Image 1: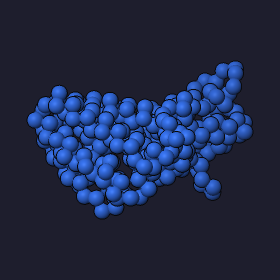
Image 2 (image 1 turned 90 degrees about the vertical axis):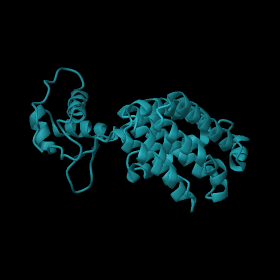
Image 3 (image 1 turned 120 degrees about the vertical axis):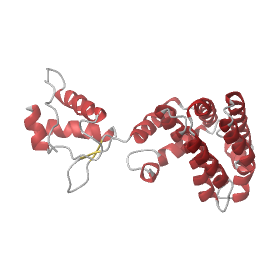
Image 4 (image 1 turned 180 degrees about the horizontal axis):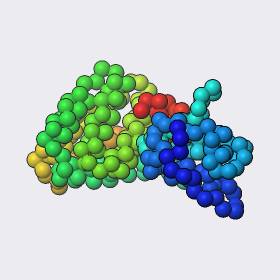
Length: 272
């Protein structure tokens, strides 16, 4: 792909860093869109009037950021996916600051409370019908994997009908964490899953009806109560009690899950 705009003028200093910033700006602005092939190393070197090793260094940095993907035998591709970038950033902060699982799940409760407030204001009748359908699907528990997928769909739909893209992106990722940890703690047992998530089907339906009635106060009260019950039941599971003997905040468990599921080419990234 040819450069869609002239390269930025480079000044003294680390030239590779300046190339990184210029290409990063083009990717985030859409001038180099997701899925586009990056100009060849030779073309980039000529455009910026630098050596090939300098271009390679810049490409390595952008690849580590998750903005580019280089596969053997093929050209470098732009991989500007907002969910992946957000997940990498949040996961890094959570691991670096050693944030507990309960604090992360508490944040999700606050985010979803804001999401239902916005949904009351902004959701269309079609949006609410989609949320109601997702709630009904989440009630069907055949096995933990399918139940987790259905529950995720419900909360992703809930955040989507807030019509706030940043809020929806934050909710999507932290919902992935909550459900991922719930699956981990259930050990694949449908009985344990039912005890934590299954019994709250009525509350999920009540949230839908509160949004449909445009009752913001009730919707917020219901979603906050829902998350408090989920956290309490998650902490009281047999597996959680066992882990908490050495990992009180489930911080290590969360960090392990993030390392396994968030990263370039991770399992979570591949499911998107």
